[in-house]
Length: 348
Image (tube, rainbow, N blue to C red; front, side, top):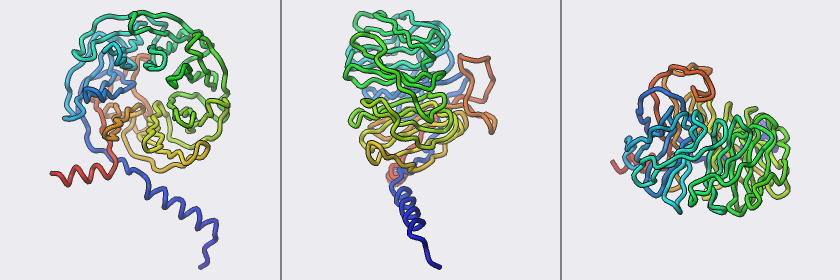
């Protein structure tokens, strides 16, 4: 039977993509236990630790042993964790307390707190401006913190509900506005909104990361799309299909891969072929509710948090934004590329 050239070409492209896929598989399931909501995770490469938000505390996992190494308490409605190397401190957005909890990066002891807006959620550290940026989900603004001064130095009105943000370390930052289906660009030198970017084809932008070399922004959208934005032209250049209920997008500059963790129990792995062309390499299986993640740049391991016992239709878990929901025990999933798994088993 004759094979049409177009069909053959598509088949070869799919086969090539499959051959180049990292092949992420579950390596370990860390049994943390306990109840409570969950949100962001942050890898601490300096101390080989993983910070995991969990209810009113942050769990600390040693990435070498995959065992619990500690916890940071008194963080009501913990959401995100940002690390500021210059001052040796970490910052946790406590969504139920309208403040940012400050802890010592070495000892993990809480050393203070800084007032924020209503329901502080996503939080990042921008090395370019040496500022902590906090997205306040219910006051529609951004709190700018100077780590050295130990206080908030500005509040930026956003005009919409911020979901996640990223900075380019060159004086600019971008924030997803979930209720506006747009992204806004911030000038961190003046602490003002510089530009509004409509996210064509994107509904409810939630997650975000950036390729700082090609100046491409990646916005994960709840209509199962990754919107790719040219940061300088302020326009969408591609829409790529992803899974359901994305809540974290992470770019790996070394491998030119964009990871999207979806609450439906998958990770969509996308390759940046060129600045304007992207292809789906694989859909890795995780677990229901594992909607946020962190990538370890040294080991290429991916960490995700969720709870056992979620329903087959669940795409998220309990959070500080909703009523208390009882689930099964809290767990952290560890996924690694197939090559690393083979090496690990060969060393035993």
